[in-house]
Image (cartoon, rainbow, N blue to C red; front, side):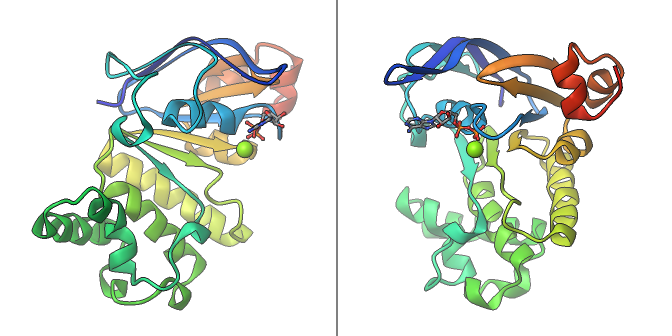
Length: 238
Ligand code: ADP
Ligand code: MG
């Protein structure tokens, strides 16, 4: 589960072609980071995969199934938003269970999944609190919990740590990496932060103006950058 293939995918907003034809394969269980400067199309690409935007042309396959016409909720993917997307008036438990409640899942199964997610995320003692009574890192974990309970084929993160302070960012980076190791689920992680990319990724996709400049492991990109742009962006000499 969690194999994602993009074939000749394009996206235009009006006359502006933001993503020229793009091919990309993401393997089961991989931690893939999309990195590139602001405005290069990282969020657009993630939203196309999530189904929050329609492709202009091309196809996206998820686990061998054509997903281009499948609505977001049925793609089996879970997008993790920044922690400020939590409902302030609801308890942590209700925030985490929210997508399951919307899907009208059996309450006992909801409870089982929330309990399991809280355990993985060290939130067991905080389930009855409201988001306002939590630290920034705990709030971000609740946002991740809301994705975990859906048991998705892949997690999609769009700069989830950008509104946390530097120390907490380092911490959450490690926590997300650990979560990836324990769940072994595909994760696609968007960031403009080279350090996040280099420390978290199995595979880095370097984007520039909607084009893929290079795909490779952090070490490959560091040792053999495809061009000056990648070298400059990754911070290695060429
Ligand atoms: P990134 O996430 O890498 O910063 P985005 O994917 O948000 O970049 O944006 C890529 C380009 O597409 C930018 O030029 C942006 O202005 C444009 N864009 C994104 N969303 C829209 C939209 N809904 N309508 C028009 N242009 C958009
Ligand atoms: Mg973005």
